[in-house]
Length: 127
Image 1: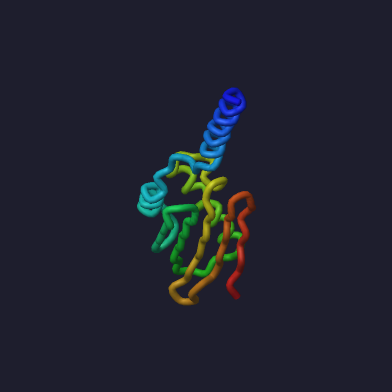
Image 2: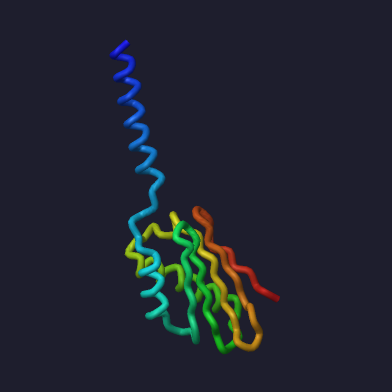
């Protein structure tokens, strides 16, 4: 009886440790990474970034001129790569969702993109 209890307890502890280790996000200070990103991001007029403290990152860039879809995709990919750089974690997009917008002062929303965990970047034209 004691042996069964000991095995059950040991197995429970091992499973708890494995579960806790597998479900944690990487040790990234996302708020700091977004502040760094916002401060150094070039090529646009204004940038805004927010993080909900859990798994959702929202980024908005304001541009003066109209962009083609190809230019927008390049800008979105640059945003993804920059967050990787400033978070110092190559797997940041395996743990966080990204919601991105490119907005024009004159025309409003131009493009939206979503990068969900485990999925590719999805770009939508707002026309």
